[in-house]
Image (cartoon, rainbow, N blue to C red; front, side, top):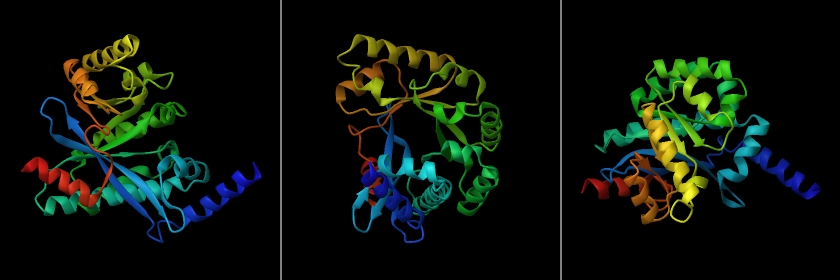
Length: 263
């Protein structure tokens, strides 16, 4: 336990200076329209290229960033980089896509999030309708009244709101009723078994039908096989992301993927 605690302290110390040392980078995972097969959206995912340990995945350093407060400048860096990248792609004539980025509970509770988002959008000259903020159920229920006010402000600016990891929390239906949600993302834990487990298949179909009745877009996460993709398309799911379509790619790899689609 002492060794784990010491390693965590080292990582936290390194993480605090990672932005200034330019050790962070964004990877982009495509989100595909199941009806057309085209990429219309992507999720920006942060990676940490540690000078000694190499590439560190978010599952290891994001919890540390959350606990230490580093998540606030890290989230702002991700949003800024994504907006800048979208502007660069537009200059090169690539298709205008919706860019999705995760925002943490701490970021939502922080005063001034609206000003920060407005600044990023002005600097990048990004159309707010092409920005999508992803939040988990757990990040919203901690202070539902404040979260509601923040999300309504985002919505008024034309920023899309996605409820991530849907079905893993305990207040999903309440959130769908009270918050200005545009997109429901079905957690990959439900998608994994839809071809082998009738109960999982029934749950996913029910989520799709319920979301559509509320006029919400539905995205399935963690799609890894053609059979899963075919079932989701048959059930009317709007879109999907996962390794079946593409893993998260560095900017250049994602550009090449888009160019293949255009050609």
